[in-house]
Length: 423
Image 1: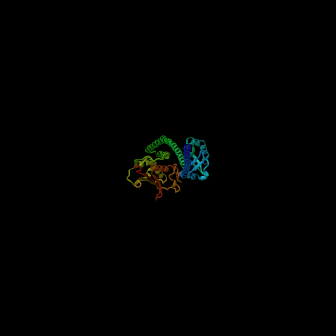
Image 2 (image 1 turned 90 degrees about the horizontal axis):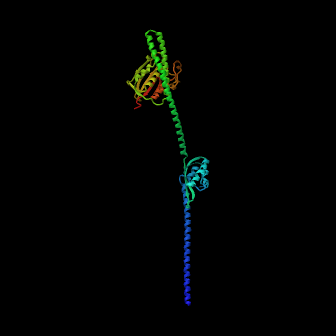
Image 3 (image 1 turned 90 degrees about the vertical axis):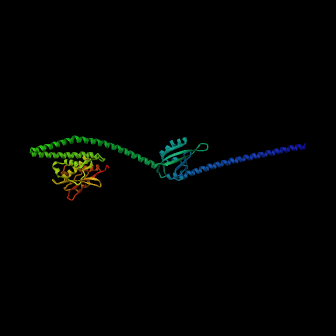
């Protein structure tokens, strides 16, 4: 009996010991699991802190303007380039509101429009602001930002990239000013062109309505003078000849006035064609008073027969030089019209040489300007357009005119007319 009782008690003790052992094992397993969980959480927190620290260090070293703000708009981190461009130290900006570094207008724009939209949508793209450096200088910038969320999906911080566009905007503004100025100039040029067309039409009307009747009157007077000469009405013929000479001066003045008006409105080179040189010279000499033509002596020093020119304008230029030489040289003295050519540069050269008193030294620098006249100009009719027209005719041909004194004491006017420009 006692043996049975002791045996049962031993069994119960063994069961109790085994139960305690299992409890101890479970407790140890739970403690180990708890320790592992705590270690894992601490490790995760350490990794997060390490990642945040590395991220901030990376942002600081990036060669670009970067900053990060919290949900209240305070600066959490800025790059070294951000600090360099704005002139601050990191201690002066961390914890400050990002809007503290904006102009008042940009600050209102950020607070009222951009930041509410950013926290709602999670990004901003190419937002233009003006930032203020520590020295008070303004920077035009373009900002793009993304919202960074935590593991729970809640907004945590932002990461913004900033581009300094100050020089770019300045260039764009300068380009806009240049384009506006160009449009103004083009509009002004169009208005001038329209006025030039109107003036050209008026000149054409004037030439047709005034010059042609004068030409007809001159021809009629020349015919009448011839009839009077045949009937031996010498006195009447002489008076008619003087009247014809006056009319010729009027026609010459009208030609110069019309030509000056037309040449002033022109800036492009005139179209040229190959024309007979002697024909142009003959027409120019025919414009001279009949009583003076015999004074002109033509010297041909070249066999060239034709040259590229605008025959009407060249006839006018040669006539003006001849008329000028005849008017400012002694009565009855010869005026030489010399024709020669050059090979380098390839050009036709026309020289008008007189044996007068020459040109005042003070007048020489402005001889070919409009209205320029010498001290003896009052003794001769005209308005100072002749040599100006000569210069403009040569400019429109790509040539030039030059005046020099020669050994005999008079003047030599040389026209250089380039050839082969269209080749």
